Image (cartoon, rainbow, N blue to C red):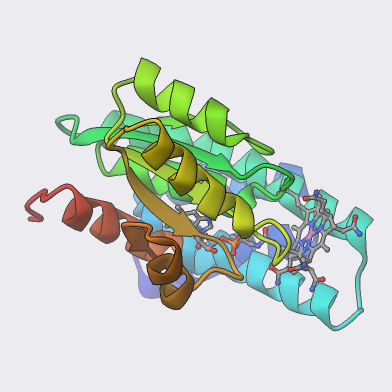
Length: 218
Ligand code: B12
């Protein structure tokens, strides 16, 4: 594909989120896939750039919650197009991961992006959605023989729920590894609460999980 064509598609993907247009987001995702673009590039360099702009505008007080919600619906619409392709391309199953947004936290766009990337890389992902209690994480991990529990927290007030999950795992003598993430999370926080891994973005999460499970990368 010509560089100019790829750039146009990436701009459409980004703009569909900024314009909060879920029809445009689905169509741009379909065009990108039809043009043979890598799903990771579609998410990272297209849709993700749009969400970054939306987050900045929200932080600057230029837009408000209803617009954020509309932009997140556009993101979800695009992810719905991309996820089946990611799953189809995935090779041998590399491991099982239970993912969710922690108790009290309804933010789930970043978590959904991480799920899509992991599925694309050959992991079975059980997505528990948002506002997930520590017990629910652990029950799902047991039921699915998971290797890793991944917990997303987007608010300083809900970060502590990641610590609760690790405490519950220890109390119940389970051995699931834990990965933590979300905007207010950091490597320091990960070390402090005794989680096994942290990554700042969905583009690093596959490398993180591969490393945590000792999976050799091509
Ligand atoms: C979108 C959004 C919403 C949407 C969420 C829609 C949805 N379906 O998810 C809606 C409108 C519902 C919403 C609601 C609220 N929000 Co809000 N929201 C945001 C916003 C603008 C963007 C978040 C986002 O989607 N980013 C894009 C994604 C792609 O990035 P990400 O989530 O960081 O994820 C990446 C990485 O962190 C990482 N990652 C994420 N999870 C994981 C997990 C693992 C295991 C790993 C390894 C990596 C990883 O990979 C991801 C992809 O690269 C942020 C602002 C911001 N700057 O973050 C505020 C923000 C998070 N919200 C905030 C607040 C306060 C709220 C509300 C309380 C508002 C209110 N007054 O009602 C409610 C929350 C209610 C609740 N109980 O949860 C505050 C939190 C402040 C704080 N205390 O820390 C923020 C920071 C805005 C602000 N500046 O005040 N929000």
